[in-house]
Image 1 (spheres, helix red, strand yellow):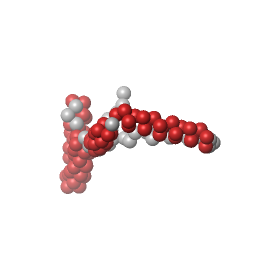
Image 2: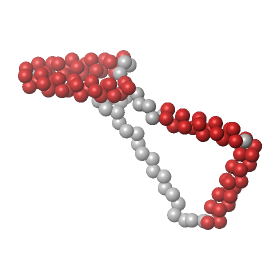
Image 3: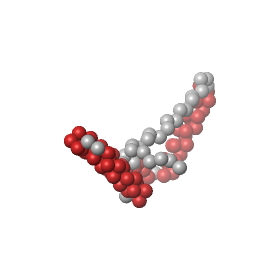
Image 4: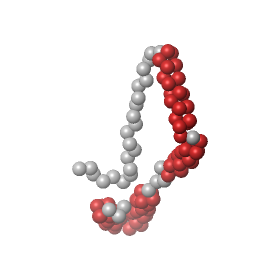
Length: 116
C-alpha cells in the first residue's frame, strides 16, 4: 500500500534503443510500400474522410492537455496550510504544532474520503 504524498510524482520515462545498422534497400521498400498503401487508401476513402479525420485529430489533441483542477487545489491548500502554520509558530510557538497536526489529519481524511 502506498503512503499518501503531498505532491504528485512524475511517471517514469521510457527509453527506446534504435539499432545502429542502416539498410537503405529495406528502408526504400518500406517507404514505397507505405506510400502506395496510403495512395490506395485515399482513392478508396475520398477527400471527405481525410479532411474530417484532420479536424477530429485537432480537437483530440487539445482535449488531452487539460489538467485536473483538484490536483492544483490540493497543492495550493498545502502551501497555504504550511504558510499559516509557520506564521502561527512564529507568533504563538507550540500552538502551531497542534494546528499542523489538525491540518494533516483533515488532509488525510479528505484524501481517504476521496474529495481531494
